[in-house]
Length: 159
Image (cartoon, rainbow, N blue to C red; front, top):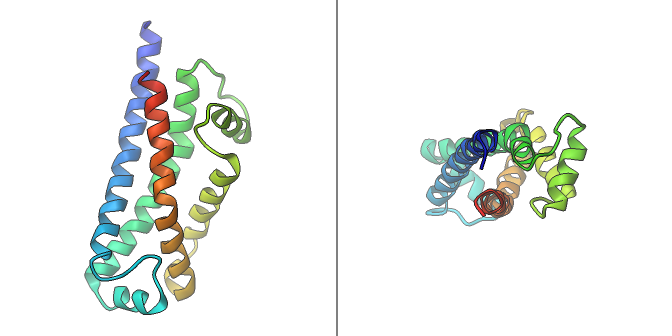
C-alpha cells in the first residue's frame, strides 16, 4: 500500500473513530434511560424524563450525539471513504451517496431520512413535547442502522 493510500486510510480511520465515539455515547445515554423508561417512549415515559435532571441530560446527550454523528458521517466520513477508494469527491452530495449505495454502505433514501431528522433537531425540539418524543423514538430506531453503516465502512477499509 502506497503512502497516499495509507494517508487516506488513516483519514477514514480517524473519521470512523470519531463516529463510533458519538454512537457509543449516544448508546450509553439510551442505556441509562432504559433503566426507567421503555422505548419507544410514550408521553408518560417522556414525563418521567422531564421530571429528572439526570434523564433530561441523557436525552439532550442523545440529541447532541446523534447530530454530531450525522454531521461527521455526512461531512467527513463518506467523502474520506470514497477518496480512499480512489474516487473523485468533487461532485454533488447525491452522487457521493449514490456511490456509497453501490458499495452497499448506505441506502440513499434512508440517509436522507436521517439527514432530515438531523435538520429537524436543529429547530427547538424542546418546546414541543410531541416532537421531542418523536425525535427520541426515531433516533432509538435508527441507532442500529447507523452502527451497521459504520461497521460496513470499517469492513470495507480493513479487508
